[in-house]
Image (cartoon, rainbow, N blue to C red; front, side, top):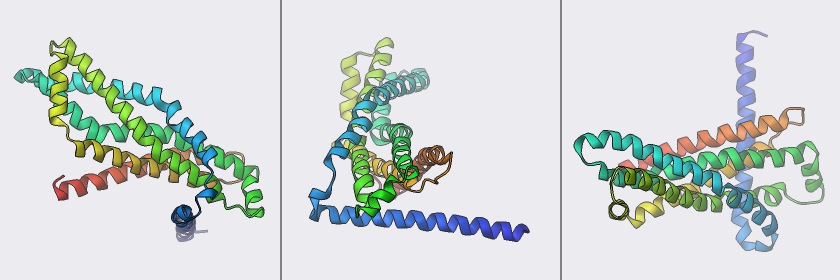
Length: 263
């Protein structure tokens, strides 16, 4: 097989993979639209378990990363602003950066590493063990049975994790500025004056979108797991990489839209 044949075969494989992803996304959207009309078919037990693993079990690591992020940002920005004697405005920079951008973004990356890979590994293992084929044989739709509870859990877990990460980041910044002789009262006064309700709501809405991407990409990678020795590992890796890439792309698109609208 020559070079042209190799290129054609690679293109055909990628086209087939894209077709599979579009079919999965379309089925997920169709099941989500039909769910409000048949709510009893939603598996609330699986949703509660996935939400516990994604949200409550991830509070420590997401809050810890948020705290360290706030400390690092405060130290780095204070080093520059101190030359002008305005290090108190580190609180404004920290609040705007965490609420608008860094809080949802960093938390989504953590969720992709923890829960996205877990979704892919769980569903991938079920596919390798032919449990998904058994569900189909019994007349149960795997997307409704396995995917929707995990995607809903990821969407609802993201605002919780983001809120705790942002509060931890502000706490870290307050400690740093306290060491720089900036009173804590002044710090929180600048945080409240520079933050609006729209900014907080926009950040939480963005986190829900990121949670949707993490859930769909993770479950999609699990549903497309190959039945070989390293299939589950490849699916978990694809879930993490695909989740982070999709988050970065979505964040860039939102940044362009917000700039165009002057938000």
